[in-house]
Length: 184
Image (tube, rainbow, N blue to C red; front, side, top):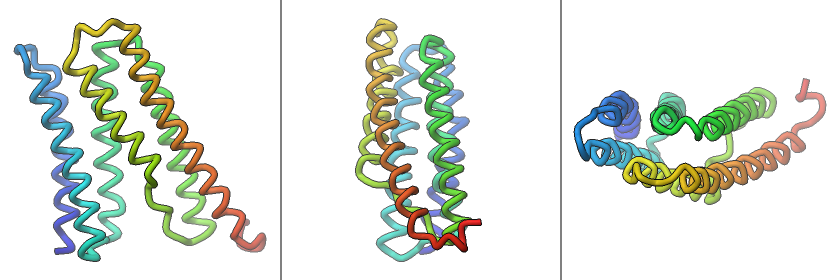
């Protein structure tokens, strides 16, 4: 059973090029298929986490594959949307910077505290759900004005930044528990 979450993560990684190909296919209504691939990737993310926790099937490989699959799909979706709506480039840059900051923070905590990173919380999960629906709207409704697209992506990015601040406070709290002799 331990391999199932890892297989789901690998499956999600394999869906990334499928999404990109479908997104840029010129045939009418193909974006619906790209959205279905995006939704299947989201479902596989939920399932791999659920199975890993329920059946005690966490692994070191899974701790690498799961976030890798998430980030690859998320960036693929954002890059594709930004290519078709260049006005949203700022959102892609903010999201990229956020991921870099979280990665650096996670590495620092892992190295300094020698502990596992805190799992995602409800705020992070809520921001992912909002992000999914915003991206779905931007993919499905190509007739949305740039102003509406800006408002939608601003909501998603705003919630993502709130989640980032929440994670940063968690990281700081963890770092404060580390004795000074171990911080160097």
